[in-house]
Image (cartoon, rainbow, N blue to C red; front, side, top):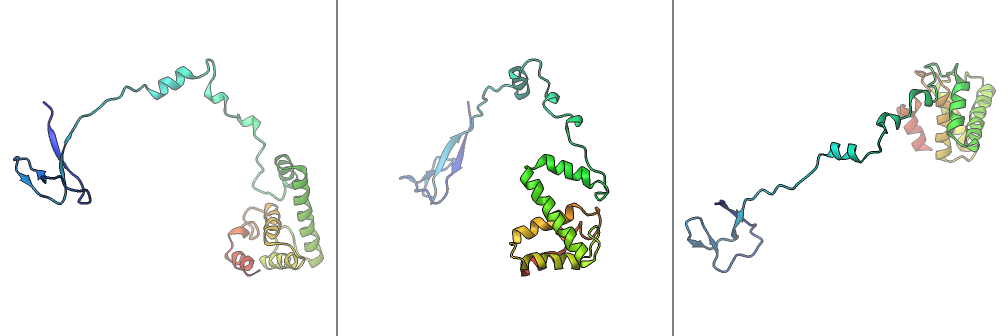
Length: 180
């Protein structure tokens, strides 16, 4: 015989007419109802997920064949980004549309001409010169999103641990761009 366990329902539910009945069979009026619940465990038939996946897969197909091999990936640039500018440019050119690539090259040349005009090194520029360049672009009428794109082209061609390569995380940059 199965056991029956009393279950209390919250005080928000209305009580039964005669009140609740406790385990001794006495009727008491509680602000909540006491119901009897039957504790029954129901087992549902299931199948093994791995077994069903393997049985429904395409015969002769190996999962590792779906992943691209290391030979299909483009080569990664070395840590010195300045020496491999052509390699980086070729990888970027393969990832973007031709118009986007030309736009990035234009923004890079614009920075190089500005650096040559002002007389500072474009490979490892001081942060103050980059601030002045961004301010020059802002005065030219560029939007804040365009300034971010110009900034990303500057950072992409910097040595890995130069101040300009860490520029996006620099606290002064956030303050500078917020004040524009």
